[in-house]
Image (cartoon, rainbow, N blue to C red; front, side, top):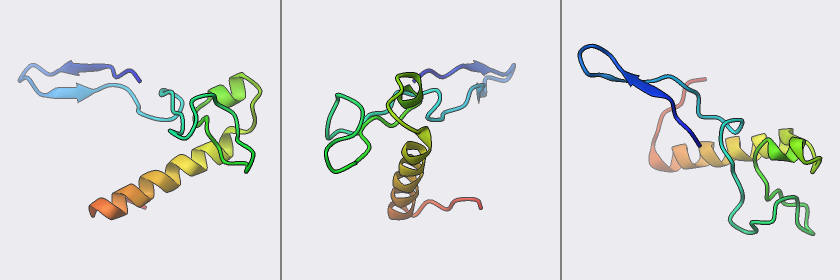
Length: 81
């Protein structure tokens, strides 16, 4: 993924971009080939699903959300509703 950033006059670093599945390339570690495997598990988890006609991005984005939510809960990170 890419991040655009800058600094204020007092040296603080500012993030000027978003970090989303639209700006990252995400693949499931089970298989680097993309698409879905025989049991229907999503392996390609970014907008290339749409670009390459591999299926809907909605299930992939829901999977990313579920994984990040589980990780945040496991790490004790509070999330805004």
